[in-house]
Length: 230
Image (cartoon, rainbow, N blue to C red):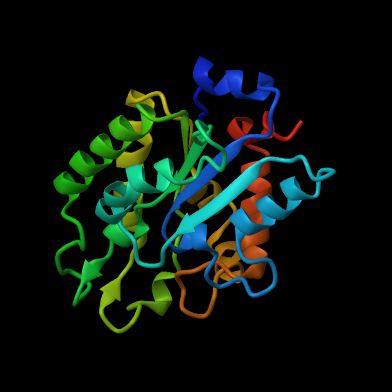
């Protein structure tokens, strides 16, 4: 898996003398739906950082189930402005994970995508542009679904082909904007579809507790986050 060298703005974070204020924005993958044990990978990471003698980074879970790129972009600035904690302080870093809810076919397996592909690309570029004017940004990609369990909620047809197309658009946009991107889709698919299915809930869409633990370990092994844990 190709990795992007870390921007200087992100590398400088590890040298700050205070614990970081970090926002995680996105959909149910950020929220942690499907993990009654650990609350998702963001919550697991929050607990890990909080356990560091009480002085670890503060991590805010701002995931909302069902959010797509337009909803995350629409609430970006307000979420950012209200999470500094202290007077004259603003968050130091934002983690995004969004796009899977933009990719499914609506109503039938060959229906239209929930967010038209060109619109998704435009909205993604706008999101990255606006976010980078606020603070350093990193992006965690989507997990693959179990196609045999579709449709989700009897109307949303998620599939690997569309997931790949949308995650590739995200990877390319992140490369253009110099945003570190963790390609979870490719990483998990390389482990085999049986491995993927064992890490998903019965709905075929959301990771289960084992899946979120695997996702946490993938995030912790990623340079963009690993540098913040030392």
